[in-house]
Every structure is written in C-alpha cells, then in structure tokens.
Image (cartoon, rainbow, N blue to C red; front, top):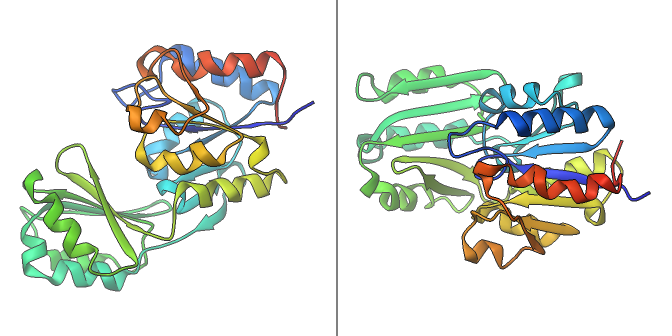
Length: 259
C-alpha cells in the first residue's frame, strides 16, 4: 500500500475566503483523521491563529506554521523546528523614526507568547521594552498601503530578511533562508518518508516550491494561472466549495494513507 502525506495550505486553499473551514470540510477531515489518513496543515499563520482549526479537525499530526519557520507537534507539546528573528534587528527597525512613522500596529509571537502595540497610541519604545526574546513572527500594519514597497526596501537592506505583504496594509518580516519546504522536510523526516510520499495542495506564490517538490502538486481552481502552471493537477472546485476534500477523495478511496 502506498503511503502519502496530504499537506494542505490553509488560507485560499483549505479555508474559505472568510478564513474559516466549511462544516463539510471539517466533518470530512475529522473522519479521515480517525481512519489514519495523514493530514498536515502548512500555513503562514501563527499557532494562535491556526489552533482552533487544527483542534476542530481533530488532527494529531505536526503542523507547519510561519511558512516553515516553526513546526509543532501539539499532542506532545513538542517543537520539531523553530527559526526565530533577531530581536536586535526588530529593535533597530523600530528605533528608525522614518520606519516607525509608517506603522500603525505591530505584532510579534513566539510559541504561546504574544506581543503587540498600537503605534497610533503608544511609542515604539514601549514595544521594544516588552520584546525581550527572539520571536518567530513580526507582523506589521501600515498606516497607508502605498508605503508597502518603501517598507520592504528598508527591511531588506539586511540581506537575511525579506518582507511580503498582503491584505492591503498588512505584511510580515521573514528569514529568506526559510520556506514551507523546510517545514515539509521536517515532517517527512518525522514520518520517515520523502517527497515521493507527498501530495500538496496550495494556491499562493509561497506554495510554488512545494507544488514542484511534491510527488503530486495540486493547485486550487482559485489560484492564479501563474501558480497553476507549476501544478500536476488543479482542483475542479475552489476554496469556497470544498475543493480540497473533493479532490482528495480519489486517493482516500484507494486507501493510500500514512499512519
């Protein structure tokens, strides 16, 4: 019997546009998890933002967070991989008056620790004093979306760091050396498998590397054409119509699972 890991991106893939899972998708994932189907969520979200979905689906597998920077096994409360950002660099950025003047809100997280500050009401110094550890994430909300490229250039003066933005005025700082693939490899090693045992579903630019890496890369119907071109298959339904679980059926029927 072939053994496959089903690695599923969350936003734009498994989740609907409202960032939630449909009742049908939740029910089906619960059933498959009970049957031993190996379902792994891989997302750019933090654990705090992905926890409810993971738990309602009754999964027991590792979860890949922060686009691969953090791999966590909740059932054992075990961290399988953790890459952090240097707090000194975050301090450096926030002490830059021009940079700080462009920000409305900043958030950092490390495991279950959460640090945030509304910069329209507080100073960056108050946030710097709170941030005493190297965080896994550094998320920014700008005052004006037109400043995204300006912020990107300022952050990426340090060659180790990148900046990607979404949802108009939101963006995140990340380590360029880390991608979802690194997180996927940790999970594959955990199960003593390799990319030949990987089926991956995704929809975004940060999914392209794994769409090519997986034995079977599946792009969502709602993904842009430039993303779909890297996939082996494309779902017949989009993320708002349970596209993932409907496409997974053909492998589940064959009982191609990983326990």
